[in-house]
Length: 156
Ligand code: MG
Image 1 (spheres, rainbow, N blue to C red):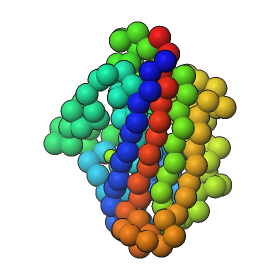
Image 2: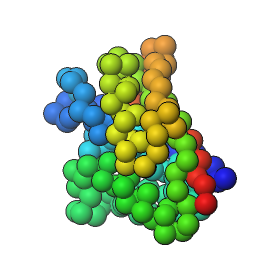
Image 3: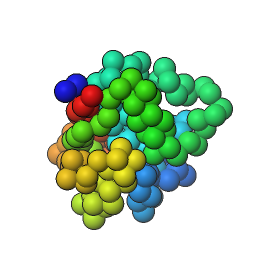
Image 4: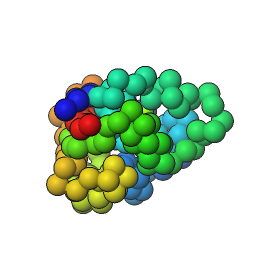
């Protein structure tokens, strides 16, 4: 078993879609970034890369590369799963938490889990997606940003 940790944060800005684990969530703000800025998927990708002993998401998908402009991050996750597979590993379990003051994400949890599970080819019960606020504190609490953290377990 191999374990990896991923963490990511993106600013919330007007005029951008809010995409988390490939689910487009209705909200008046979205995440700013070069790709679709899917902060949850990015944290999962970094956790998988870390567990496989690979370089991080910024090295594999640079934010100055036009190929990844507005990229759908679930497609990038698919590429990470392939890279991990080339090293002889496959995802076994992922647990993640999204830090967001707003909007409430509970209604989208099962769809987010299903998307991540499908791309990683694991059962939905092996994918945890939780959400928490920061009690109004800091940049996340004031609604300026959203963050996500993930832990991934790989098997050989
Ligand atoms: Mg990111």
